[in-house]
Image (cartoon, rainbow, N blue to C red; front, side, top):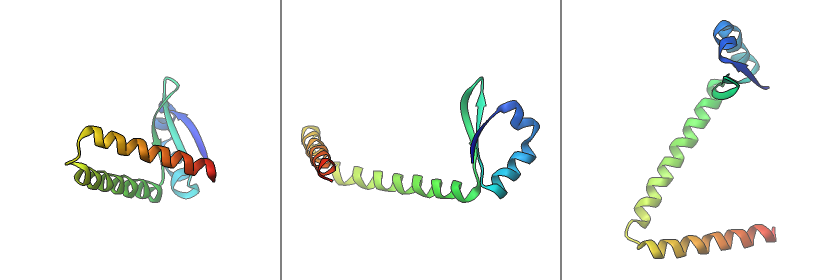
Length: 93
């Protein structure tokens, strides 16, 4: 279950909230002055997020290397073509 908790509540009830995250797989958004600033999540979810972030970084580096020799105008044309293709494919589906 996803819920919000003010930072003061988290500070006062950290042990209980950690149990909710660990055993119930709850997710807690920590707020400060009513604005979300952090979250408590269980370790399996955290690990999946880290793996996704690392894979995204790997793919980004790979793409940078693959296109490093292209001129900006050519990259822009290629990107426009990819966007057009993606939008036309999405509309057809």
